[in-house]
Image (tube, rainbow over all chains, first blue to last red; front, side, top):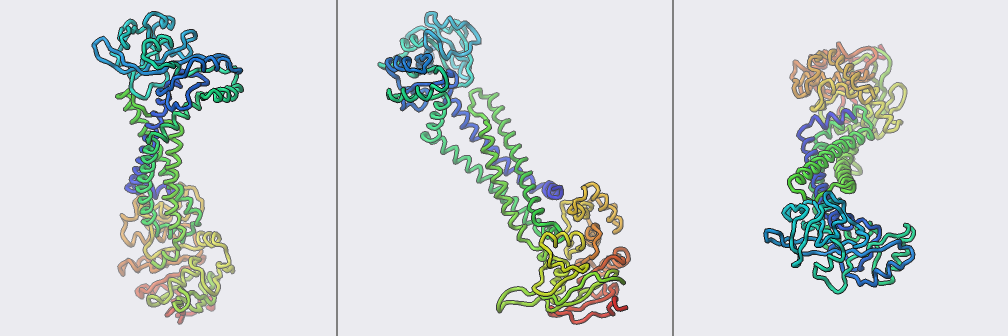
Length: 374
Length: 234
């Protein structure tokens, strides 16, 4: 191992080229998948922030922001289902607010059930009861907050010719995908202030009596022509939509594959050259008495060392870039997840495996006699 | 001179098949003894290196046997032959085959590392052998910083570091000028050879013939004669 380590590390040019190849590949793969993960997480921001265990929705809904309103009787029907502890309506829609300076700003409006305020955000300023005050809205202090002119409690704006007053500042765990500020208000005020269709319930949030009741609820909701999904199932549905029906998933997949190919090309070629240049030396080692499996282990060790170092550098670099980007761009949607790291790790291992396979084949085939004959 | 070190019996090696079959070595039999330097000489293509490879466990013969310490080495498994080479044979290659990315001491330590010796201990032993070949002060230099003669001595130090019974050298003076070549072989004669070691040298450099105990001539794959008497019969 130590001989292998010295042979590799002391050949600084090749080692650097190998590291650059794998680091670059790992960096690109982590960056691409992290950006996509960030987009996917943000696409489910409403689901995550509201946090209901079961959501009832129209089966055609693909993303939380493109809800298809449901008639009131569905709410009544869901409330009457056995296994449902309670069910409340949720409004989710978009609107334009007119700021004090006269400019318009698109916003996302969440209307919470008037009686329970189920799914309310955590307030950092103001009192939740004030949401029942006249024209009251809660503003989420996220990356988009500044677009409303950094409002404070008491700040006024217009929404569809209605007066709106900020009565609370809230924070949520996940910012939205589309770069617009989020306002919370009551369900009634939301459907009153915002021009809406005949049906107004975007989603029905269900609290089941126990987890065992969920399957039955889903079955009964399906018989009504609607869909009941757990929080994770809804998030998966949104993710699936973005992955497979928007082209984003394919693009990210292509970029990831390209990163893999780039990494494989650089690393594979460099490693192959490294093996070729040292082939006679490996033959000499064989002649001296190194066993075939010892040389294979040495090559695998070299490949693994390079791969893991490059992988660490790549992930570290990606983390650094994302952190720096977030400092400058608060709404930068990239998130390194264990899945991303796992995927990049598998790809890097694959690069190392393919690269070393070529080397191993060469080294296994070299005959010590060739060294004498040369 | 002493007891039998290597007995080659009716060794045959060919390359190619059918009409393209070419015999590199035919019916080669000889003995080599501890305490002697045996030269294998002959023109290019006479089968010297092939014969050396077969008796040192590198090239499997197509016929015949090679007995070392009374054991036919070609009856061993591949791993056992590798162990045999590591423990019994010291190699000095024509082009030295030193690792340019390792220091001189690390190069010498390679057989010891392969024998599972601790790295630091192997380096200490390697430095001792570098001292024997007069290169202790060069221990931390890479081989590329050394002259041809010095590299040859490093290769010798590497070959003897694992205390092999049999030392084989392939054209040890081919890359050296006449004077350096003579000094190297003289060094081997006086410092490396002992009663427990057999040294077999393949060469066609007649300037160093004076250092041989016996010289075995080859031509067209056959041993055509061994000059000087068989030391075993003395």
